Length: 344
Image (spheres, rainbow, N blue to C red):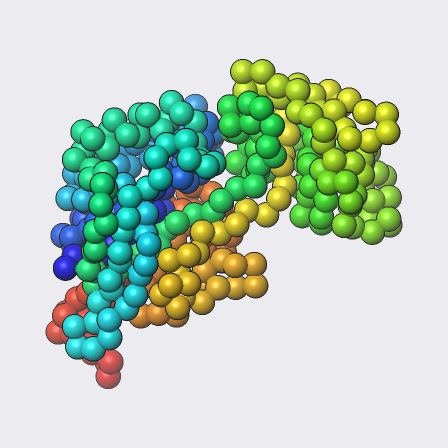
């Protein structure tokens, strides 16, 4: 029995592991190396790194830090999870080996994956070869989201270099550049309009043969702001060495747009399989519902990072939420005498 099993090894999960470890709690962190923190993006709005720092480097530093406080790392996949009620209330998490590399789409650039594997070996990470069960008194779910990037040759090298998803993270770097926002709904329209704060060279492309999901009056409003709109899918992303230089549209004239950066807007899918197994409440768009202390509706289960309903999708927010989840889980684990009595 361990004090906490953290599921997910990105910034939120690592922050939870570090802070649980510093409270002298035993932690097993389970990760499948299939999260956003292994892409090629550089984080430039995280306090203390004025020149920016790659998200993959934050992850490596966080793993070293969590190991310092006793975190046990397991490379594996959660097959099942359940709660055992009663006076010895705890959680049973059944793990299984991850699919071999190259099986299906996996997040992250190969170089970042390799560095993470090497560090994992150095830190004593267990790479599951057979099923294993972990018993834990608390659970922190930090499983993140799965992004819906366009499928074209070279796309993985473009993520975080010329293919983006977050205006808060990368809008500042668009100044003076030619941008295309690819998305058909109001969220994509808002992103295109908000990017005008950085550059006037913005184009909105539906990215689907069905055209836009917004009204003609809204399109007219967007075009009135100087944004060209194209109700077409993208036939080809012209790119090389991680740099997208043009979009060829699937319209009658095979229109070609010269671009420097693309913001792909398609709502990411929260990875909530473990949450569903444990009966955790989800909101209308499939994110985990938490309160201000990262507590879910299930006692002893906490959630942090991109999988939660605040939907901030910032590394700084994920680190904060992981810390908060750890503080709340740690308080839950105190003996009754260590807590403020209910009548005071």
